[in-house]
Length: 324
Image (cartoon, rainbow, N blue to C red):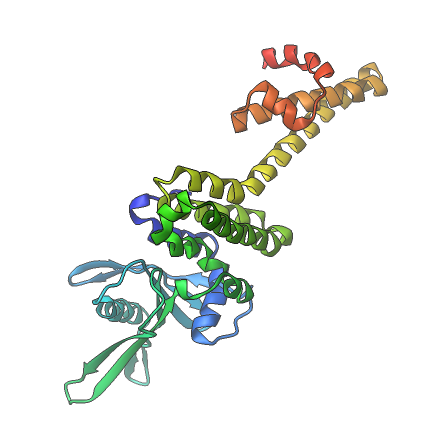
């Protein structure tokens, strides 16, 4: 999952839209008052639009039901945002313009802006468009202030999509997080709650890959925010990466056991079932040790400690490891 730090927030947003678009459904329901089910089909439209001034690229362009939704992710305040939103929405609408009863109809998308920083006004971005005959049309785009949501509100409303950006509320407290143990423990407690929530909502629902991706995106932004705060990064990494490490270790052990036992049983048919199974278990352990050393960059001792191999039995595996 390639994410560059130069555009970290846009990249994380687009990664979620592309890899796990189902997570945006609760956000759309929250902003537009809809009631879409979690499994409603989502069609991703093209984000590149050609204009006379060149190409413009939107952050998202989604078709749900018979409506088009456009969400822009904005990390900093921009007084020209409404102008860009009108331009984006006009381009999207032009893509879907159609002729009915001798007239062309152009339907604008349902749009909103996510502001990742700040909690205050405005609730809407507005522009007044004056038509040639003097009629005035007010164009209005709702604004979502991500930092206005508490952790519990995000949980209650299932706004998993916004969780990677939660750490940004601590941006101005980076020094305090590094030097104040009480403050740091409070922040870590919040992230322990977030990790537990993601386990319940994703991991326990057989959505392991989405869980892994979310953890990675949360860590990417946290590492960016606390780039020069080593202690905070390490502590957050322990909390948000622990379950992923455990999953990977379990998977490697299981693979090693399956391969080793399979080979052992094959030999057991030739030399005796009992001896073959015993040999298979040894091969399983050997395969597990090797896998952990290769993938986790662990030493022999670290791998054997993780597998709980008694000190008195470790010599049995050394020759096999040398051969590997």
